[in-house]
Length: 113
Image 1 (tube, rainbow, N blue to C red):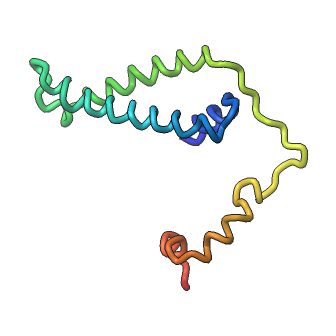
Image 2: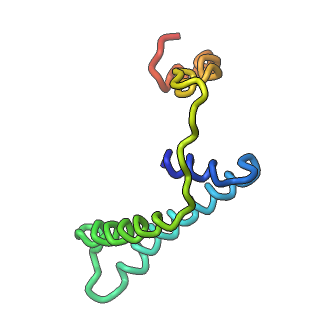
């Protein structure tokens, strides 16, 4: 998921405007795919109880191969060269420490008050 987001951000012209709609469409696609497997395929003759069979995993494997082949057609997106090399602040932004002052975030990380 993080790789997909990074590639999407690199290809967008206006990330503030475009990313929300891309995520909504991705979520919608996930829902449609789940519903397709659950409702449509399970109703086909011979596919009752498809959820408990290896069929969803086989279907996922086939779709993954197709997506892998499709990914070879995507635009070339080389990694950004960091001018200053690796910095820990690239992974843990300074704004994160401010979030730890909020009780809900401390609870998530199980930090004492």
